[in-house]
Amino acid sequence: MAKRKIPKRNIRKLTKVGGKSYAVTLPIEIIRLFNWKERQKVILKINKKRRTITIKDWEKN
Image (cartoon, rainbow, N blue to C red; front, side, top):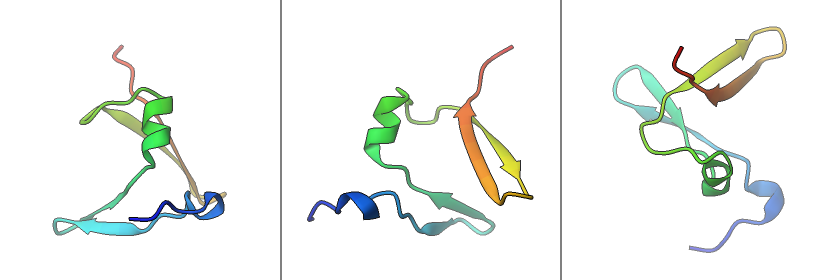
């Protein structure tokens, strides 16, 4: 598989998972940058006005 050019690397598609969920894959560079592991918990912050989603680490209280 050929490596994507830099501008297109961050363009992703939604994938349907199961009956009612969707998933977006993240580039391995981002996973390594934040030192995330498989099945790690994360928090989604949704801003409807700006139409953005922010993903950050879940921290145990």
